[in-house]
Each structure stands twice: as C-alpha cells, then as structure tokens.
Amino acid sequence: MFNIPALALVKEVLHTARTIAVVGFSPKENRPSHMVGCYLMQVGFRVIPVNPGHSEICGVTCYPDLVSIPEPVDLVDIFRRSEDVLPVVAEAITIGAKVIWMQQGIVNQEAAVLAEKAGLVVIMDRCIKVDYMQFGSV
Image 1 (cartoon, one colour):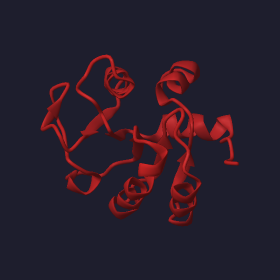
Image 2 (cartoon, one colour):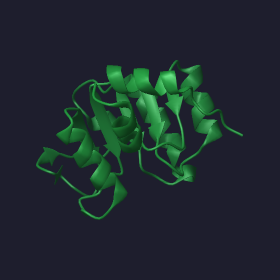
Image 3 (tube, one colour):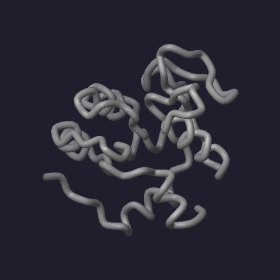
C-alpha cells in the first residue's frame, strides 16, 4: 500500500511549485486533464501541456514529452494509466523536476520509489485541482 502524503506536504508543494508540466493534457474540454490544466493556468501557475499528438493546447505550446520542454519544471502532474507512469517519472528525473503528482486514481509504487530515490517528492492518487481549491491560493 502506498503512503498518503501529510497534508502539510501537499500544501507546501502547492505553495512552492510555479511551473507544472501536465502529462496527458487533453485538448478535449470534457476531459479531467483539460479541466485541471486550464484551472491551474487560471489560478496563476505556468502550465506546460505534454501530449505527443498536439502542438498547442489552450493557446500554449504543447510538447511531445518532458525532455522536449526548454525550461525548468517544478512539478510533473501525470494523467496516464498507472502502468504507464514509470517512463514519465524517469523523464521527470532526467529534467530535474522536484515533484511527481499522480492524479486521483493513479498509483504506481515502483515509479514512486524510483522518484523518491532520486530526491523527488511524490504525491499519488490525489487531484491537484481539488487540493488547490481546498487549501487556498498560493
């Protein structure tokens, strides 16, 4: 079973992260990744869409993978199936991200261990939008 992060850790991550790469950001407005990504933009985060099928989402340049992003990323928010998370975490480590956030319903203990061994904070099975709405503005 995975560890549920202390709420203090979740709050600290939300208060310190400025640039968020959303892996699996969909251009479809009814998809959770779209709703969350756009919301994060609206509340002031620098959001970078990551989706190999698109060049732009919500008016922002979209990248095919994390290693293609030409600027530092603080947090990687993952909207992929649990079994597809490990390669995303490996890329997040490569680019020097500080936090891995696996959205609600996404749990991958192997990926979490890899990220933690590399010094990243890991949050699993939580919705960043819900947590941000609950814990207030940064």
